[in-house]
View (tube, rainbow, N blue to C red):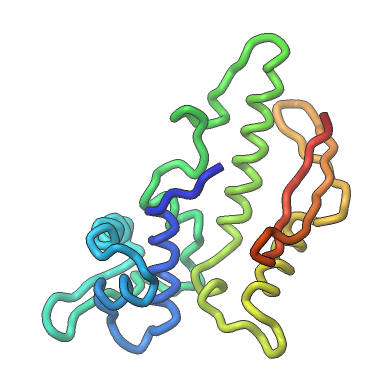
Length: 188
């Protein structure tokens, strides 16, 4: 799976806006603060404005504000505003896929993955991402704990879809940069 640069930039820009609600922020200021190419960010803001996620004001006192409260904007909404569907397989929604023979279960797997990703992104608000970590907790720790809670790292779970159940085990660890990771593993 891959998150587009456009989706990544859109989420980061909205988190930047949510963190500084006292004044409008310019596209240049956000681009600089988040190390995002300015021209690319302008096109991202056009999509965000059309979706109602940001509002803008021209002039020397102008800039961008969130279009509504950050707690009501989910990451899924942001991704959909700039990219469309959250997950596609060769440009098709997983629910519409039909494979013949023994590959029939692959379509169900893609649907399960799409549902899990959508649930995670719908359950994460821009406000939650912009909130400073609580006392004694780093942002990475907060993200890892939330990921463990949602994925049940270390617990066995069952996913169901297309009339079939699948056992899965959630596993976790650290990547090479010391960040916590979590993944669901389906048995062969």
